[in-house]
Amino acid sequence: EYLYGEEIEAFLQDGVITHAGLAFSRDEKRKVYIQHKMLQDGRMLSDMLGQQKGQKGVFYLCGPTWPVPDVFEAIVGALVEYEGIDRAFAEQYIEDLKEEERYVLEVY
Image (cartoon, rainbow, N blue to C red):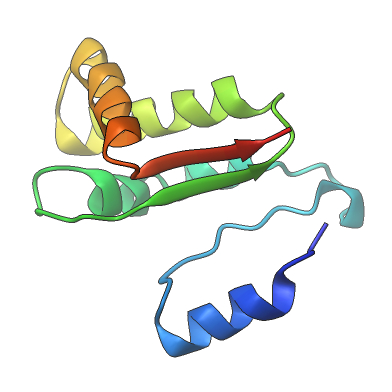
């Protein structure tokens, strides 16, 4: 599913968005899902969403609902590891990001 592929590529080129973590599990021999890519990009996620560097990044997840718990865990893990905060604070922080519309799920 790359429904908005051209728009995403244009946004990247124009600097409107700085990173698009895309996973196409059906197109690869080995199944790689978005939560796997997020584990690899933990430091970047923490830098973009965390508090320490004063960033105001926004996280959007579009697609099916089934990876949502693993995606949540990947972000919590990144915040714990790279922000140095405890798990409970990281979980609440993500809830706060939802309220600020900086953690947005467009899932079906």
